[in-house]
Image (cartoon, rainbow, N blue to C red):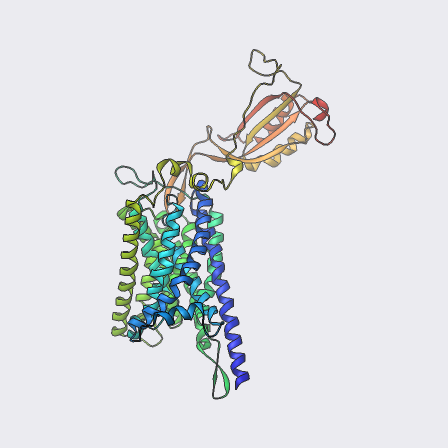
Amino acid sequence: MSDLSTIAAGVNLVWLLLVTFLIFFMKAGFAMLEAGQVRAKNVANQLTQTLITLIVGLVSYFAVGAAVATLVGEVTGGGTLDVVGAFASVYAPSDPNAWATWLFGGVFAIAAANVVSGAVAGRTRPRMYVLYTAVIAGVVYPVADGLVWSGGWLATMGFHDFAGGAVVHALGGVSALVGAYVIGPRRGRYDADGTPNVMPGHSITLAVLGTLILCFGWYGFNVGTAVTVFAVQDGHLALANFATVGRVALNTTLGMALGGVGAGAVAWYKTRKLDTLYIANGLLAGLVCVTPVADAAVWPGAAALGLLGGAQLPVVFDFVEHRLRVDDVCAVFPVHGTAGMLGTLAYPFVAVSGFSLAALGVQVLGVAVVVALTGGVTAVLFGVATAAKWARVDSESEYEGLDVTMHGVETYPEFGEHDTVSVPDGGVVTDGGRLESDIELVMAYIRPDKLGDVKTALAEVGAPSLTVTDVSGRGSQPATTGQWRGEEYVVDLHQKVKVECVVADIPSEDVVDAICEGAKTGQKGDGKVFVLPVSAARQIRTGKSGIEAV
């Protein structure tokens, strides 16, 4: 029997730690998802926020959060108040392996805190990140945990939230909405009459990468909540709450996939375009919606919830943006808030055990308690911080970007450098304003799809050496419209390729003709060619100068 108990305990610990590390990896997903949806000048700030949430959240949860969850569970669940025992169970447990359970709770706590950051991005001081992370991970989430998962009042009433639809996602989503409302929109987000202006994020690539990382980590979130694999019964090993782990895995997967379908379909109906960002956000909304019931829902119910979670996303985001006029940068409230609430409330309708009106009443009460708790605390916290001028950066810092003003870094420094041009001492400038030189730089801006033809043409005139750079710019080519989460905006900077060719022993006119021949389509936007004098040149390897260097 003791051998079986040892095996069961060892497997359970390994599984618990494995899924904990998987949930921890979701921090990378949060970082990429949010970094992709903010402007380039605020990327480092958003990444720093992720690090702050990790550091402050884990420290706060260890210092007070885990003990608060235990105390709330004891006091509201009919137990006795034991403050010393609650903190001792965290700081000095009788079994050191109990700290594995603490870590599992800790990664849930930092996930709840991380949800908030995407809504208040682009205008929040780093010290505000520290403050609200400490409060959410140290107080708000632990109280909800105590009421629901640690044997507290809602648990005794039968409230069902398997993996955090209310305790993590609705909590974080409501906090995000309230925080974004109190701190106000980014400057320029709304006109004086309340009309919203689109502020596209800088990288769909990072946003989709972050989405896929979060989807991967979500299996730790949901499947991992079945933390006990084996139990010893009548001298034999038996599956514990792992007995229904297949249902959890299937429901999680269906919710994710159908969430993408729901968001993509509604976005297409609204704009007649297959919106990449809405599909990505829809995957997450579907996952959130199925999270509270993944262990107990029939699979058609899980599929329906995923579809609902994704479909409500564009509708709720539009309401938040246009009606409430709240600047929720990363669509946090519809992805986490409403999706989490809907999934939790839907439990009696999709449960394997069938519908129960009493269960519905308990679910409504539980969601109301969590919303009131997080909304009230967040309103006070952000209200006081805003009044004390702690929450928001000044207008100049917001304009320049938080990367430089708050952290002293540039995420993409090569785009911030500005070359200066000056005439060297002794240079002779002709009447046309050009410096006389035997070396010239032919510089052209062409359509990206014509690069191959231009390279061929240059090789034919004896100019095979060239430098190519991807750029964007504006000329006579007409502007087009782009789309960011269903909202159209003007695109007047077009993708081009910059071709540079330094020539000395062949006429620059031949090079110009070759580029024009290879790049021409006859349409606006074919580009332009410029010829500039080169005052000096030196070959690095040999030290040769002038024409010999070219």
